[in-house]
Length: 148
Image 1 (cartoon, one colour):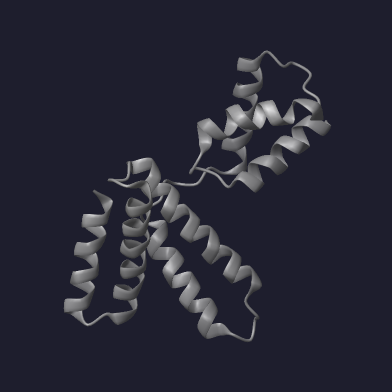
Image 2: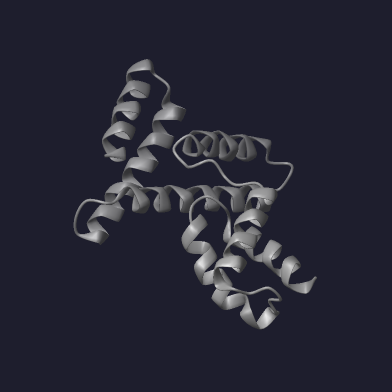
């Protein structure tokens, strides 16, 4: 599904002589192909998004760890992240995450949640927002809610 679209974009970039863009699409196609082989069949849209999200997460980590003196690498990572980001769902902001946390607490009937409830809450919460927000960010916001 998505792999076919990415392959077409890769070929288009190749025909235009845009080697840099072609390489990004090639990496995405390879990751999805490998995921399909590991899955022993076609990937679901959720699995495709999960694979691309993992690629984006790795790029974000690379950007954080990259020395400031390596502008060439930073630029390349950001370029790749920009292309991959076009195929990912829009990421939730803090207010949206807080809204889903509040909704989840109401569903679970937890009016005064404690840090002991965090595991239960996160399990339900991540099912709702998987791929739409970073788990670390959700965990931090939930921690803030539980400590108040």
